[in-house]
Image (tube, rainbow, N blue to C red; front, top):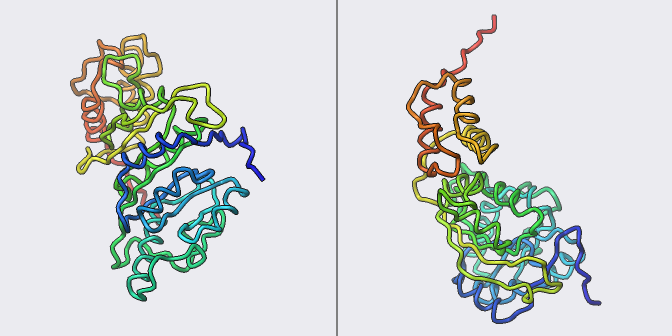
Length: 305
């Protein structure tokens, strides 16, 4: 029976074979690499990936599609909402399974060897805590992300970026334009700053609507995201708050938004607020966050008698 795309999951299945080949070539998977695919759907991208990798872990929320995927002998299927997946623990599980395969010499693991109960990812007996002596591999993460929740997924992965080697995602082209935007452009904003802090990113392939079934009403593209080796060390919550305030009123000078916020923080450093938020480079937002952190006194410890 043909699977009917479910609107609530934002399902648009990739069907163009030339585009699929172009995406696989851009990802350039190698045998044995630990890779996770988000939203494999009808396995259009899954099959050519697993042919090169040997084994692949996939995360699928749709129970009907997850059931079909479990029939593939070289897939580990995680039936879960990706926003509930702990990617650090997933990396540990994949590492544990790879070590088991190397030790026993039985080739690639079957999905049934490492069952991952729905919404309990990271809680299986094979999970290895981060403190274990076994090296945790960094994951390569790929996927055709649901456009209606793509930004929450990107921020969810940002929390686990230290466990990730790189990411290749199909996204709405407009979103990618915002991700890679330079300062002093209309696309430059909070998403640009937060992601460029941790990733080097580029648009690697345009994907037209007719490449999907059903065709979306927007243009799509593939973005490559490679984590920076040595990102600025800072409080991510503080950076997020600072950038949110700065871009809360894009057309106004920063003295009306970020300037007042800095006053509330009793910040006495040097920062030009006679600019608009879009005129400030990422590096200056990062430096300002570090200055505010340094100027903020640590909370006093309360002694319990």
